[in-house]
Length: 120
Image 1 (cartoon, rainbow, N blue to C red):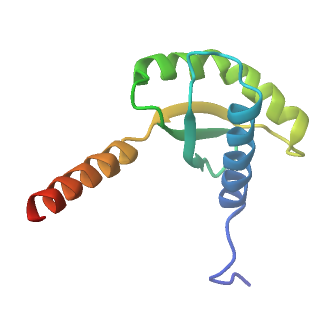
Image 2 (image 1 turned 60 degrees about the vertical axis):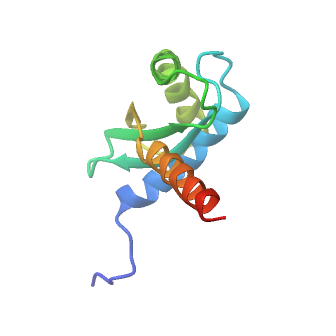
């Protein structure tokens, strides 16, 4: 008896992973290459074996490639910590992907600010 407001298990695991990965990156990741990263969303496969973690870079001076390499280096460490923290049969294999939506948001904000300054 499915209801429209119930979520799939993969959706619930996605939210859980987003929270835990954010905490790990904020509090425990020591790689200086990672810098200030925010997890924007996590997409978990229906079989819960893999997850795509979308992230954005908050510090505009940090190179995206440098962050990507740092996250790749830290992925096994993050996976291991998730295994200790979460009560899941399988911890999904993590793949990190840069989320360009944050860049678009910053660019739109800049354009709106410029328009506002011209109108003043």
